[in-house]
Structure formats: C-alpha cells, structure tokens
Length: 430
Ligand code: AMP
Ligand code: MG
Image (cartoon, rainbow, N blue to C red; front, side, top):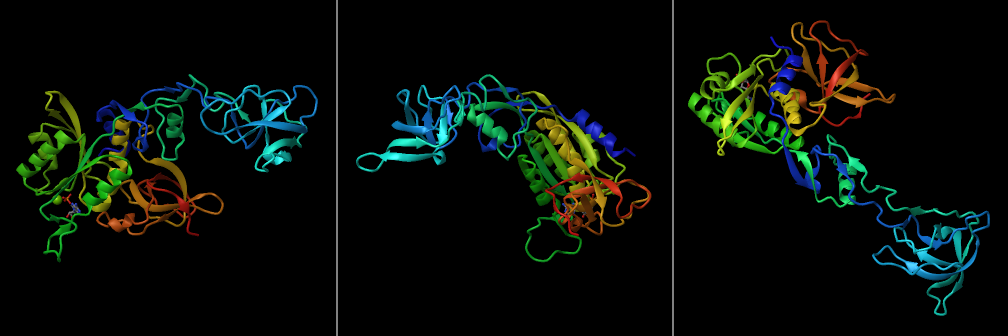
C-alpha cells in the first residue's frame, strides 16, 4: 500500500500547474500568491512630510541653539497644495502628514513649544517660543521615498497576500491598480450513495438512510481556504448517473471531490467510472493511513468548449465523515495549493508535546484528531479529542490539529510528536 508521502508526491506530479491572471488591488486579493516581482512606480511619501503636529523651522546646522521666539509665517495642513517658502527667522504651523514648506529643514513637536503672542482677535498664535534647544535638520520629517523608495522591489513573486494588510497596503500605497497572481481552482463537491439524503431533509429518517454530512463540511472547508466551490448535490449509486454528474462537473470545475463509493463493496463505483467511462487515470486508490485508506486520486482529460483538452483532478474520498475531512485536509489542500502557487503546500507541521498517553494503531500510521494549545511555558501541548472512529465526525469537534502517529507502539504523555495544524491555536487547557 502507498505511503502518505508517496501519495503526496503523486499529487504534486499530476496536479496541473498554476496559471497566471491579473487581479485588481482590493479585498478580493487576500489569499492569492503573486506571480511577479512588484516594483514601486512612485515613492512613498511622494513629498517631504511632517511626522508630528508642531512647527516647521530652519534648524541650525551648527552648535547654536534652536530655542527662541519666532514669528509664525503660515500654516501647512495635510492637504494638496504648496506653501510659501519659509524665510529665515520664521516658523510655520504644520500638522501630521502635511507637506513641509520649501526651506524648512525640521519640525519641532507642539509639546516642545509655547505660544508667546496671540493675534489681535486671539484665535491664532502670532509668535511661538521653541523650548527645545537641540532640534537638528531632518528631525520629524519623512523624506521623499523614505517609507518606500521609487523603483524598489516591494513584493516578490511567491509572496502571499495576507488578510493582515501588509502586502495589500504596499500595493495600494504605490498606486498599483492590478497585479499578476496565480488563479484559484474551482472545486466541485459531490456526495455519492443511495442511502444519502440531504442533511436538511425534514422528518425522521427511514432505516438505512444517512444525512449528508460530508458535502456541507467539505464546501465550508474549501471556502475557508479561499477556494470557489460548486455544490453538485448527491449522486445515486448508479453508474450512468454518476458518470453524467462527474462529466458535467469536470467541465465546470478544475477539481472534483466526491465522497463515498470507494470501499470494496459491489456498489463502490467511483474507480470503474473514472477509469472505464471517463477514460481517466487513477494515480492511487489505497493509502497506508488511518482514517482514509480508500482515498483515490485521479486525473481525467476533458475536452473543453474551445476544443482544448485539459487535465482535471478527481479526489474520491472515503464516505465516513471523519475520513473525508481528514483526507481533504491531507490531500486536497496540497493539490489546490500547487495550483495557487502556495509553497510549502498543505498543512503546517509542528512538534507538539502530548498531554496524555495516546494509543497507536498497530498497522497503519494514524492522523489523530487533537486540540493543540500553548501552555504557560510556551510549549505546544496536544490533547486528543477522544474516540477516533472514522464515522464519528465529532472526533473533529474543536480539533485544530492532526497528530501524525506512527504505526506500532503507543505514545506516552510528555512525548513529542509531529502535528499538522488545521486551525488557529489558542491557550492549552491545563
Ligand atoms: P462508502 O465509502 O460509500 O462505502 O461509505 C462509507 C460509509 O460512509 C457508509 O456508512 C456511508 O453511509 C457513509 N457515508 C457516505 N457518504 C456520506 C456522507 N456524504 N455523509 C455521511 N456519511 C456518508
Ligand atoms: Mg456508498
């Protein structure tokens, strides 16, 4: 049976490569990866600007004191326009971000000044005393291009646009209207099985019916990864129906995820449908892991309306909900990351300390659902979510990690194991 690492290699090898598109600079850019180095077409700031509210002055260039009483020649607000040049012996009131009048070489904070004389109507200062004696040229000034120099590389190919704002902020600050990024794949989700009914079907179930848990969960998982999705509903276990639905889905989507129909039962139709009816290639159909052994990965050549033939990807995941969710995290995520240009692909791996003993499967490496949190000493502590049966979707409740447990001996409290992180990490329960 194929090891998980070998399965991941096959996924990387057979997932179609990234395509470059142009995307506008707005909130929809979050999550994309840049397909170009970006240089700043203009400097930031574009003019010499004050860092503080205060008074612009001509600072002494020798050891003489900057303190003294000066007449206030004007006001510079943070607004477009030019101010008259500053004459020797005068100062100008200036607000944060406002352009320096020509000739000014420094700004003194308002806190380091006091008003010496008011105008006749008492509303404005006519003369101001600078109390600070050591104001030097350049003080409290943002020089042109001191935040971002013109023509400098502000972002590199491969950088990902985060929601925290740094990358989007750089692009917006220098006036870029669009940028080249890697396209996101569209992923369609199909549930299979004669027993599966819509999760929201009213009333109680007839014996043998099962509510569709996988489709809403997989669709929400994909959305959380920033991926556009298509909901394909439920297919019966009839070869014709399945083939029709898959064929239609593969025309519209880049990746199709099915769940169910990959065990060894006679109604487990996915593999024959992909190979015989759709002319696809199954790259793997069994993986040495728990849960998720029957996970199947295939590519299918599809003739598009343009006449072009494109390779589309199918992940046929096991039907049991915990298996479907674990394998989507483990296998589908790296595949969509390859298309989106995200490196390294897949979940982050970290070392965690076990909060208690955990039993391991004697035969297969296990992806054990767990809650990882930071303890008082700053260590990542992992606690199991409890029973791990593959039908129990509750084993994923509150889980933010999959512990990678090797087959064989049990692992003990305090031991360090690898964990794949699926969600945000909070404080550990101690
Ligand atoms: P299968 O791989 O089709 O043999 O399905 C394995 C188990 O998963 C069976 O007990 C199915 O009823 C169950 N199952 C399959 N699809 C779903 C689904 N979408 N939601 C919940 N359970 C499912
Ligand atoms: Mg089935």
